[in-house]
Length: 120
Length: 108
Image (cartoon, rainbow over all chains, first blue to last red; front, side, top):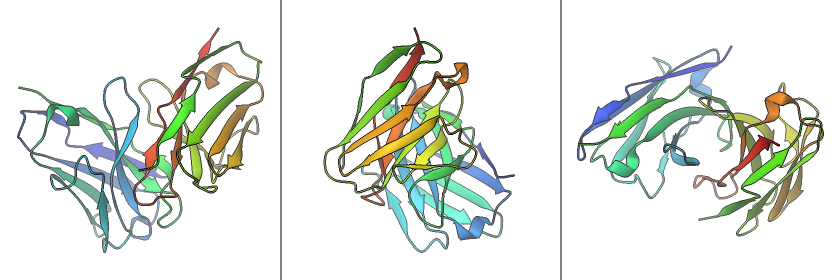
């Protein structure tokens, strides 16, 4: 069965950095686009970034462009999100999510999420 | 950016009743709209993709309709496990994906 397991969340000071990981299993990871979606406490969902199945293209929301970097290692079935210059407004649960088919832009499987708290 | 507006913000209903949730897009998204269900402390779950297609394992009481700018998620008869928050999401403007603000379906 498909599993996505995020890790790497925690408490970081404003201006700090954090790297999230998402370990995938149960499907051919190298055949699907992957995304990060976040949810601030008590708020709705916000798409953050995506990466094509072969990592040839990466896309970001305006709110994180220039600060966050999405990457993947298909040999390790792992997705990453490097977050730099963190701000209080980046505080959220971060989910990794799998494209439904190849690179569709809707998500049929999600991880359980990892909480990132940006606070001094 | 395509803005999705969901209404109502909260829907108070009893088990067995019919739920009708609305999602309106600021510009046409064709049929490239999905619906997700999220329960407290859990990740979202895909219910409907491309406006009207049920995802794998989703019960038939969930149905989606609409195209262009106006979409509806209908739950024909609410089960106790259906009380949750529902989000719509567009992929028409890929890769700039956006979600609606959510509708909470609560027990009356």
